[in-house]
Length: 288
Image 1 (cartoon, rainbow, N blue to C red):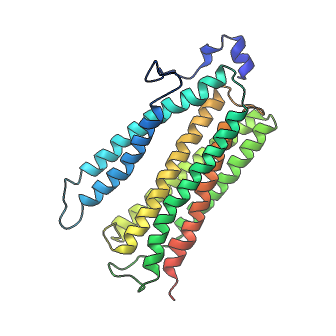
Image 2 (tube, rainbow, N blue to C red):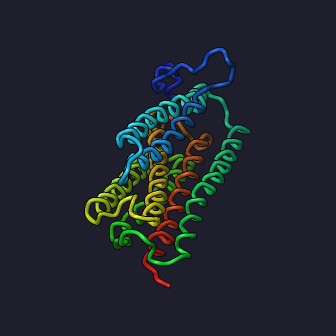
């Protein structure tokens, strides 16, 4: 159903489930971004607590870390929902035009991706420091990393970039059916990739005994791949939100800022994964 059709049938009747902006009486100010950031920070806190709760002499209960991580997930998703609903979805139904705000949001996404480069860059610097020393590093024996599963997962993520790109192209050409279909395919590929990464972790941890406490390389490997997995999960959530909005009749060739920004994020995540495979997987197999 298009936006015009929605307006003819009463406009607000076709809204997604509404929530009250919070706190009320603060004008355009909102705490939803703060709640989202709090949940995002909780991911890292939960990961740190997980490390402290494992090993030969754990400092805390091993269940605290996973509990904090799961709780942070709910906080993050709740904040993300409230933030996106009031920042984008309500404005779309109310017919507010895209203009300067659209350019500002794209610039904001570019700045955010710049900060993400710094985040991943810190992890890669740690890995390069390890790789420049004695190889293989001290600790447990490294398993065979570059498997067919990694190559298949890489192909899946690369294909998902193409499906998302052509979904955006279809929207710009007014082909909404193809747009929604390719969005659904992209979301499915993202979920399959995450499932493949979980399977890879299972094979390493259970099958090969390769765990986070297995030495300096293991900490770099699980730190970087886990961080990337979190980003893919967030990307999948954002694509799911875009897909649901598309099913409700939102987006048009003239109004597609969210599609553009989510596409920028997803392509960035894909590029990071390719670099990660070359450096972390292939690099670990090469002996100088």
